[in-house]
Length: 303
Image (cartoon, rainbow, N blue to C red; front, side, top):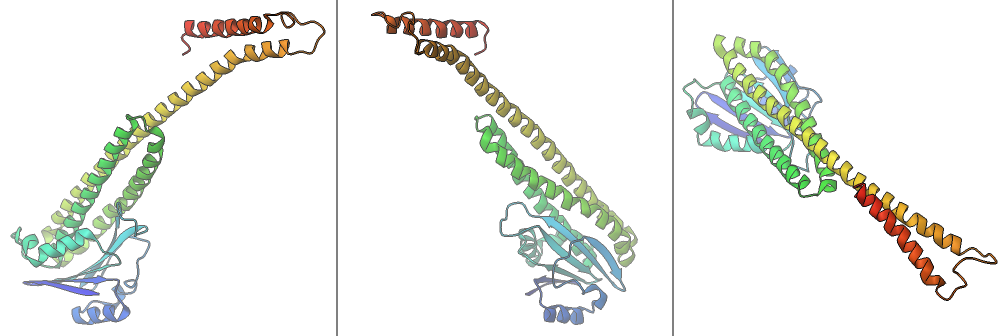
């Protein structure tokens, strides 16, 4: 599927899971070098920036947080020329959809006095995608608050799964985001050469945004580790308390078992057994033994 958005001097062509015919048509229409089109039909397991003649291709992955229908990450390929930006993607991406709506009403590009070209459109789009990543981090932070609340509501066992799931999300987020820095740094001289000498400052602004997102990921990861340690400590404390209670119960019932076994021995003469109050005497002995141990444990403050 191909969608086109046009403004004075620049065109954005958005390809969603393109067919070979659609790729060929866009290549011919916008004069894109053939060597940049080899991997557009499907995602590739790498992020990179390459330049060829009058075009630059940048491949970047973006983490998925909420969606369950997408495995791995969102990949977007940007092909940048003087007056054109071609994006190739393989799933619906909310941030790009929102950017497209803004582009249609010209709000995104009218906020700036810069002349419009493919490079500035790429910068504006990356900023919008980073805004989307910031919203995803907001969601992760809300999950951390939910986990914290669950821990102190004594739902530690339920939180073990939530902590593991959130930890996996943060690890994936951090790994994918880490690749952005190298790609943007490689792309900076390419874009500067194509557009203007001071264009690198706009890439630096993206790198500042990247650093901000990286710090948030690190902060969330540290907070999650603290929550995991707290949850593990509370679980361990509860398990220790349970084991202590079971151990005390075993110590209390042990003499009762011993006494009942002794008086249950099949011997010729067993004290109290043959007497008229033998049963009650034995019960009293067992009760006294259990009570003595109970009082001793309480005195030691073992429970």
